[in-house]
Figure 1: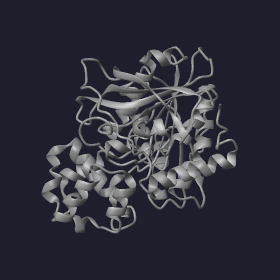
Figure 2: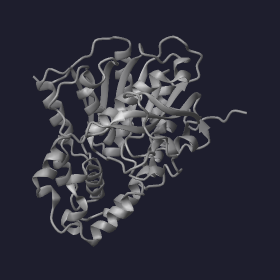
Figure 3: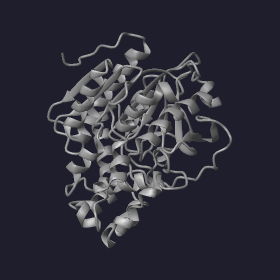
Length: 399
């Protein structure tokens, strides 16, 4: 007997997404333990290392009308070495066998522990962004969702290291195109591809847009939809220091130290900093933010690593807007975003517009970080749908 969906009406859908994202903010989502996949094989980026059927629930007790596979696949680390990343591929069970559009979807911050990985929460509906992903499935799109490096695979998560995130996002699309079960349902090398993400996923998707032509030129990327993008991590850290979101600074420090061990994060930490790092590596975002609330960098360190040239170089290497994406972009940001300042979005818009990128910009007056994730999801999917239909992209760049 089929359940009647709690997401049957637009109002219910909005309320469900709000609740899911609120659960994530409290650290109550994504608590299933992810399994470790095998070590990388000899294949190239996007080659599948392992795959197994899984379930995708967009709400606890409500499976999507879709087939899903937990996969691990080969990708590329920030230092250019092959690594293995886990993820999930979901394809609607709608009987379609012709070429199907594919979205490679980058989630926002979930934490650093393997239990927080998107793939760990999909089977029981506890992954916060599952309702947003389901909105793509009901449009007939296949979706590949990376867990990023170190979430669900051995080692720590390289959080906010854009070089590792962008490759993981693009290689998830490659892996989906090579997955036999997805191929049987219309996903293949000729599938039009959209890149999408918000917050951390906004950074990951935007970086993917900038490197796609050089890293994965065979992908038929029609456009990228990125929201709430932390385009300049140094400025984001200045904003977060000592505030409600201060825990993100330590998460980012751990991520960069994981990608670049020569940064030697531990040599900067005091006892309080080591305690927070110990907690953060195994926890989800809500618990980390609670533990780091109101803390300054000086509270956690014997000296500030962001004052050092090697740290400044590593963090600044993630700055977006220096390379022209090869496909159009939909960029959106909440004007009242308390986590990623609005100027981060407008600055990236200006940088890309200056490079003649077709940018469609949408701001959300009065909306904070979470609300913009909800309100921007529909417009982002509509925009991608127009790109899949080969309609010309409009640009509202200033001037």
